[in-house]
Length: 114
Length: 113
Image 1 (cartoon, rainbow over the protein chains, first blue to last red):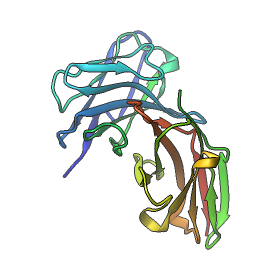
Image 2 (cartoon, rainbow over the protein chains, first blue to last red; image 1 turned 180 degrees about the horizontal axis):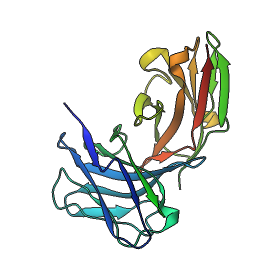
Image 3 (tube, rainbow over the protein chains, first blue to last red; image 1 turned 120 degrees about the vertical axis):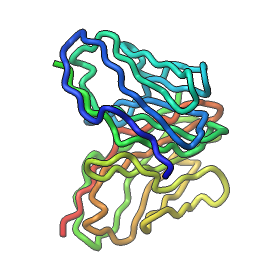
């Protein structure tokens, strides 16, 4: 079954404690992306990756890092989480060519930073 | 930069009522347009998409959308809503050679039985 898998689904942690949210897709997609969803703001893109070792900033990259060492994985790293990063996070992937292809979303990760 | 506006934040309808959700984008060139739906507690799913050709696009579950280039709009419609259509709806645009998909802020649709 084609899917995008995120882990963990829920996490409560404290300010400053590094965390990683994993994302894996089994569709051999080239393009992967991270979004955060906040009430009244819709989805905002954090980072995206066109392919292995190719990543770029989205609209709200501050406080986040990503890596793309393998095609299937695209982890999101919060080196020093802060309360304003409390949000619902979605990973997504799509096939090439990137432009215009619909994205497949994971089930989301709800992060609470205390 | 591309941007998307959804002016209706919350829409409440009775079953069998007709639906139209507004979506306007700001970009003067070629665009690819999408509507996604997010049911409670679930991830986003694609409802329909427009790349080119017929400006009236039909999607899943009886939804359709019309691309009106002169109005920079891509409104979502459904002639008769059901209780199961209760969800949040997002319009999204990919403009020109942009490598990003920009989402609107979403419209929460509540259908009363």
